[in-house]
Image (tube, rainbow, N blue to C red; front, side, top):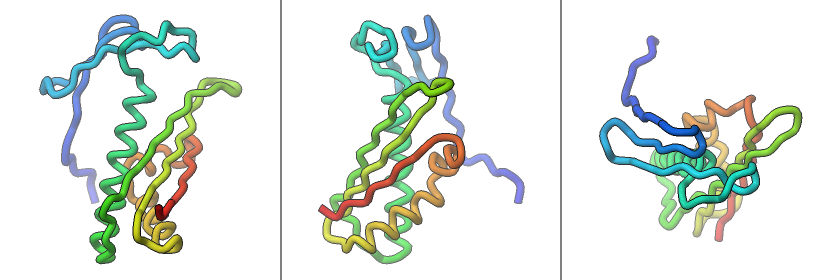
Length: 141
């Protein structure tokens, strides 16, 4: 099956990279970027690539989780995804992601199965698989 485009996001960053501005071509998102102190910046008022990635990954994962739950006829009301993206250095700069998925009202086994299934189909999970460490935790309360 050939790749079929469903949606393309377009964004432009100007300025000094991590100290610049970013905006989408449709005007829905416009952000100032600041460098966190942990990587030598002034921790200014803007956001940073790690925060944007954390939100994007969590939103995508939550969508995959909810779709899988609906297919299994499992209710996941009140579910949340807490996403932590860490920029660190070993031999080079690398990212590590931790997703904590809270699924109230489910057994631990149901929660673990849903999280594992979402990790297989989420586009962010598929894109990062084998490239960065992604730690998953399923919680039921």
